Amino acid sequence: IKRGNHLLTLTDIKYFKKYGPIYGVYEERNPILYVCDPDLIQNITIKDFEHFRDRRAMDFGDKYFNEIFDFLKYDKWKIVRSQLMPAFSPARLNPLK
Image 1 (cartoon, rainbow, N blue to C red):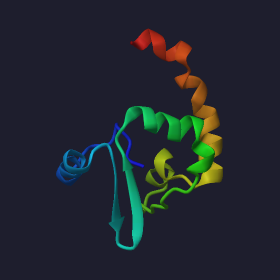
Image 2: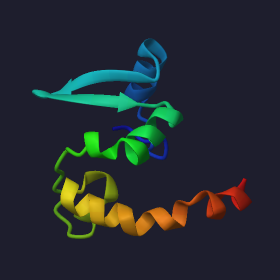
Image 3: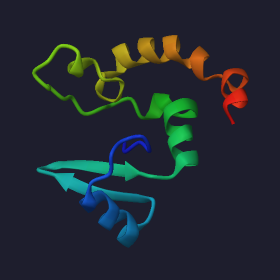
């Protein structure tokens, strides 16, 4: 899943302009789905996260980088997500608008 806060590469921008906010590519033999629609990203990461549990495993060679939220496996991601969600409640986010 491509999230809006990641830096976009020129290739990402080119594909977004050509194919729209949702498109797929292959990275070697692995299919990768890019989602650039904020509402759909919200549904995937909050409402329907049980259906999108498999995340790509990344080994950055550094214990801190290996703990990046986007790349945690489901069991660990679910724990971290439950700890972070109160910080992103509407009551906390609305004053920032």
